[in-house]
Image (tube, rainbow, N blue to C red; front, side):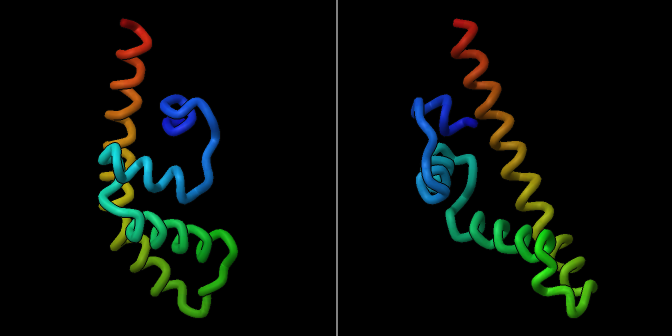
Length: 85
């Protein structure tokens, strides 16, 4: 949604990642891709051989995901302020 509001059009996953990296919403595209892979593993149960491994990965990646969420919220607040002005 942030990409759409800023660019005026939808973009590919890579376009969105590059934009988010440029806007400092995410640190780098590699970490964001790893998070997406983890989500896919969970949703599609690709790596369910050992749920403890998935749980540990989720716990390890949670701080990064929360950081990205906070940074996205800051960008949304910035966009909201622009709309008010």
